Length: 443
Image 1: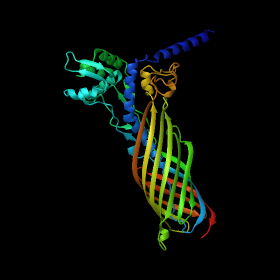
Image 2: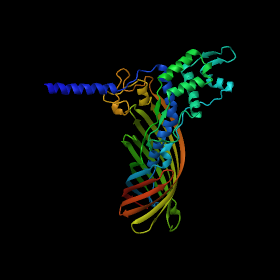
Image 3: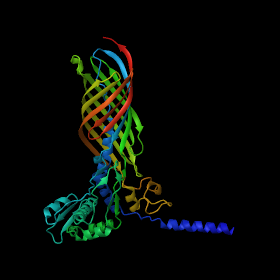
Image 4: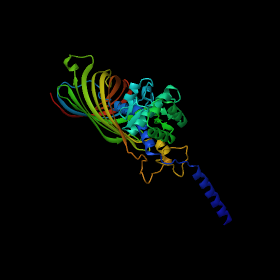
């Protein structure tokens, strides 16, 4: 009995000591939360978009491959169907693994009064010629954030805030943090010439906002993704006066938590050019194709959402030559254009929510561990601690690419196996097997 009591006492002592070590913050005031949201929004738009967009580009470009192998298309009208199963591997280039992080600073010249008044005019009307200067505040939150961006500009120009030279994209590796020391912010605030022009109530609000303002804003962590692997079925139907129709489709599939759910469809048509040349040394064909894709993903403990729709246009000129009874080589040059429309829905980063007192560490957590496992739901605010709801950003990008393809094809009756490599902004390896169903042959 004594032993059981002693063991129980030790367990209770350790439990109380561990619970005492968990640091949780009181809830910040609404102005501080709004200031953090404004900053998080701009940090995301400056950094979160270049963080996520490379994955969207690489995934979509990888799927826009393997439109052709042999350039031979029968001149006479036939009815056949080629069914192929294709694999593609997109290799992530160095340029897609990192970006240059930015801070939402607001440059200003304290000696240019007209420019300063113009910058703050959406938020406050100031009469600088009255003594003391009179101010009529129209947007308190916007004015506080504009003043904060002035401070960030001062901190960067005076080298009191350090911005990492490089940060990883979602495809890269590592993690970077933006640190805003509160003492430094106070010092910059007191030195700022614009601060003295603001009403005392606004100055007091800014001071209070800085007192509880999060000091660390984590940039998203790289997931060290070296390649994107995808698979697709494809159907080719021919031939009508040396012309083939290509169809491809994949229902929504899950490519893993790092990439998300992906679906796409494509249609193409190609026509034999060599049919017009008597006894051609090689077979030539021209092809145009159009493809649409959708990529969705939910990222992080706050369930930030990505929804990307992409459209591709591909025009290629390819040729092939049979060098033996069973072996054929092929190559081609493709022009590609891509249009991607991406919607991002996101919240305050979980570490920022923790520092604002919007969500707290689990009883089993520690103050130094911010992973998903150490957070629990706030019973008053729900799963996500951000009381002002989601923020949204739409990004539209267009790009062009030239791609050179070279590969080989093995023929065994109606079966074929092939592999090729594509050189472009993103290198792609494709491979697969094909079976041809001869349904009707007529001249």
